[in-house]
Length: 244
Length: 244
DNA sequence: GTAATAGTGTCTTTAAGACACTATGTA
DNA sequence: TACATAGTGTCTTAAAGACACTATTAC
Image (tube, rainbow over all chains, first blue to last red; front, side):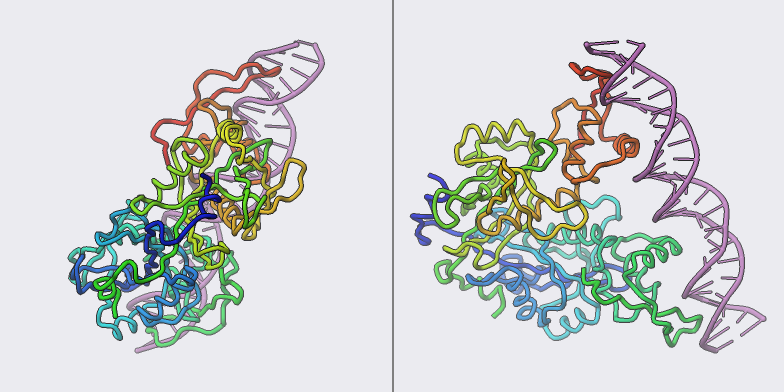
């Protein structure tokens, strides 16, 4: 029987179907390190461990729309520019209770935004990531509490985080994602700090500046930063229509 | 109610759930152009149009496993090395009959392999792709019959194909995917032809050779190709443990 | 003035593009 | 021998890394 024939006589009640969820990897840079917004679980399974915020996809709801709705309902943030589909995780036993396939999305948000989300919802916590050195990166990543202890992550969420970090590092150079972490006006040093935190390595200053200016993504404002105790740097802004 | 609470009282029958399928983008290079294996639909909707081979994901079946099973059952090919998850398409109306979320997978296979699959199954056809020039590539791609006419693609499968071509081009340079199209022994010219077909542009010969040799993926065999009417080229092979 | 960071000039290194050249097989 | 393609030498160009240097502001 071909798929077409199958569907022709298909009764939706006939076959068990998986549930589909969206999980959100919401990352930022804090104190020079990547950090992610996690939700502390209050029930079994994985009670008291951390998990990515997520929720079920509605029967008439697109995946991107579901991600935006969940961002608002579970995290309290409005859809903020981009939210990018990352990967779909569907191992049969990834949730011990039932078959759940999850489509992971990720976004980069300014520290203040994730910080305020954390303050409003007691189940949310912004956790720093402990990522292996830039070059090789295995499948997964570990999270660490403020004290440096390793936090256990629920389900396969360490794998999801590892995939997100890889994707982020891969896209850093040829996309404008990093600017999502910066205010409208920023200095080239700010931008370099963000890149270094994401990559987990230091970059060459003149080369970095040349590269950024050559890409023609940003423009100088002529303004300078304020309140420094040394020479203030020029402020730049991302040019319009540099969405992606 | 949090997700955790929700799941605690969750009865699987309570909510409508989407069906989940896997669709396969099986590509090769034929006559210097990308080609994809499509299935001619014999029923509505999209009767007589072409669609990617695909099938439902079993309730206890992982996504990768489902992709392999569908490769075997719908196309007649055993799991052949890699089959890579591409993207998940979940617009609510992408299938007019019911809500179906599809996880697209893609693989590159030698022309002979897809050719033999096509011969054994009358509903399958290997169709050349008409891809816009290498630089910009919109969301979708069109297929063309042998005569050059544009073939209509069912569902959102033109988008899926467009995504696959983009991914393929993006990975070409830093991965060993292209070797999946070549026999065990091949010449550097063969390899360059494959790259040029995928990219849709010509490449500089000395630069290409330098690049390939510097990557240290391949090794010369000392053997030369046979049956040419001119100087035969050296045969190379992909080194072991260059899986990805 | 000093301190501290912004910002640049320039040398070296690496790799790609261009293009002509030499090498080596078949017929 | 002629021919056709394999394979290379080398010049130019572009861009990254290294590193020291100058510039500018607060104090």
